[in-house]
Amino acid sequence: MKNYLVILLTLTGLIASAQTTRKYSNEFMNIGVDAAALGMSNAVVSQTADVNSGYWNPAGLVHLEDNEMSLMHSSYFANIANYNYIAYAMPLDNDSALGISLIRFGVDDILDTTQLIDDQGNINYDRISTFSTADYGLTFSFAKKLPLDGLNFGVNAKIIRRIIGDFASSWGFGFDAGIQFEGKNNWKFGLMARDITTTYNAWSIDEEKFEQISGAVDGENQELPESTEITIPKLQFGLSKKWIFHYDYSLLAAANLNMRFAENNDIISTSFASINPALGFEFGYTDLVFLRAGVGNFQNEIQLDDSEQVSFQPNFGVGFKYKGIQIDYAFTDIGDQSAALYSNVFSLKVDFSIFR
Image (cartoon, rainbow, N blue to C red; front, side, top):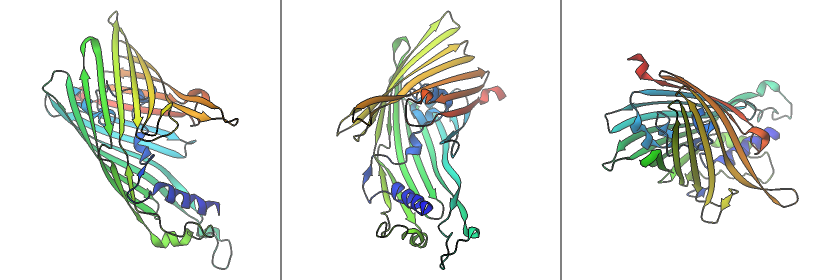
């Protein structure tokens, strides 16, 4: 019975009502990439300037001086779910660049016990099988410098593929757009608009598989879920400033305001939109060693006595860069300040100039 319910909840939770927007949809695309950015609590929209800009703000790709590649791996929920990311980007000329990236977030080898009991009511463990549920996001990015000095823009085209074993699968399509502006005295500003046209997912459900599990609870889940899902747009505003001390030391401070057009538990929330701030810092020595810290995900949580308490998620990270190779590590959700379990995140970035 428990496994029946797990599959039913997965199907009904991930598949939205027809032509209905959702507060949370394709959330795996919002987790974040690059341990360097995660160590700063994702406050990088204004200053991102490498291969990972395709995710954070495609406008930053124009800063590429050579081809770059990035890899990242992290695990969530006590290593039950795995998140993997690979990206490649290249400059086209002095004013434009291209990028491509792939994200996979999945849970593998899930036990399917829906056929554990046969028609005669006998338990047969040989009838147990396994399946995987996985989400894929393939993103194509383009960036270009605008005639106004210091102003750059970028766009993403996204293809979303989501699979729940043999039970259901979907295809989705959407677009992002971002701008960056470099002001005086190392001030930088950024705006990232995700799912600007709304990202549309079309689901296909195996009716025979659904029939096998639809009777798990009498009178419940007797009809197929609707087959379309729409992801509403999100906005991210960012600003940052970098200071250099005695040539060898640097300090980068950055802030983001992350906006959803829905009411939720964010620290600032109305019926029109919710806003969640994030702050990040990076201390660097000779562009070789980096220490990072950040705080974000501020939430109003209801306690057992009906009072409200603000929770937050602190992150820390370190990085090492030698010539064209950079290795970064982030430790997220320290001190149990939010409900999520902590995660160890590793990433690798390679600048192809080292092979020239």
